[in-house]
Image (cartoon, rainbow, N blue to C red; front, side, top):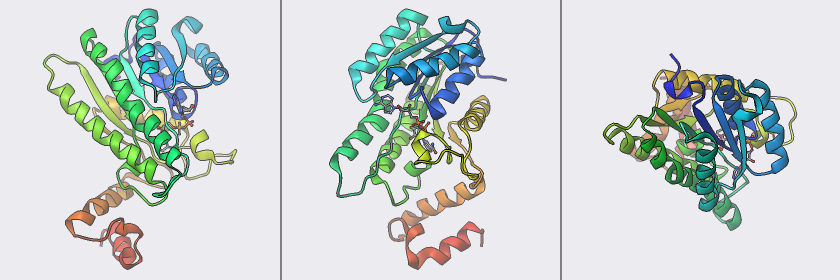
Length: 283
Ligand code: NAI
């Protein structure tokens, strides 16, 4: 049974909604007859996305709202909440999804660290603080869906700033769900969306065709909706290369680094390569 927040005329707000996973979510929600607001940067991209959304929305363009918002700025996000309230009466689903992934390493560039944390982590904190108290007050069933990443759980070498931001999103979303479920009468639940490899502008890196291992944004959102209906907090998405079982072994191994007192990121340490390969096979 679809989650009651996804009912016709209820309201969904999606940051990073002009593209990729966010746009696919917006299309689904609009298709359910919901009123949808996409918040993103770039007026032209927003207008293009809005035209697509209006073509599937029950009420056409009247059900679709766009907002030029930089989620790293609290005032922008607070203004978005007020604007959605004015136009649609409040918010039932908030998807804190805007994200970026420029390269980083431990020694720089500092600006990339600052920007990644500002968008990926502070964007989620801003969304939570600006919207969730009003969603609770509204007194209806609602959802907060924060887009994290497997990189925030197994923290692979390559882009530490991104990993830190997504590890922060995981911790923030877990804490939020704990607080919400302890609020008397509250009908809002928080969920951590953990995409696999999804072919989007973020991951295309010059490719124009989806690599066979990746999922489409639409597949990813179909999975997300099914898992929310099933009541999952951790929406752990597979892709065509990585089934759930492999993710489970990788995550268990990462937790085992601490318990077994192995070196940091031992999965990528040559002395542990053989043991990890055996562990993955369940030996
Ligand atoms: P995308 O690049 O297609 O979409 C991200 C959207 O966020 C873009 O439209 C972008 O303009 C917007 N955005 C960036 N900075 C913003 C800001 N300051 N304020 C408002 N909007 C901003 O990429 P994709 O893949 O759809 O990413 C969505 C989320 O999924 C991100 O949080 C990303 O980290 C996460 N993710 C994606 C994976 C993938 O394989 N594509 C895997 C794991 C997580």
